[in-house]
Image 1 (tube, one colour):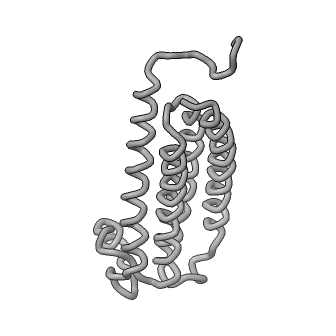
Image 2 (image 1 turned 90 degrees about the horizontal axis):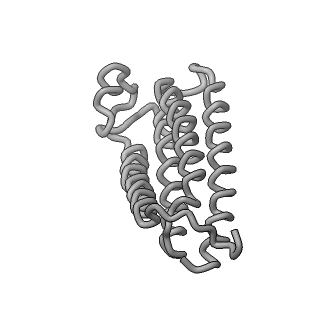
Length: 160
């Protein structure tokens, strides 16, 4: 790993933690939206849960960042895909709530809480597909980076 990559890791770790806390905050704020303000309240419940849980995931992965061994490009791909994936997950619920529609990718929620305008909203489906792809990329890069680092515990700073 280049010395510059360690600096990038520290910078990305800070922003990952900040954005994780922001995502939890957004999730909590979404929880204040009253049922009458949207077409499909179950979308608000989904957004509330997804933003808060994904914010926790972002924070956990942020703390793991300095334990990973990834190059500059991979670090940036990790950061961008993690952010895209976690934010689009809650956003799918938010869009569904205001549109009053969901996606066929959510069969259980559609069966228990049918949205008033159907289950074929292309924006909700697109957000969920983007979420699934990007979160998987971020998780696989996390695993790869952790496994690549191995059992070494050396500090990149000389003398430590």
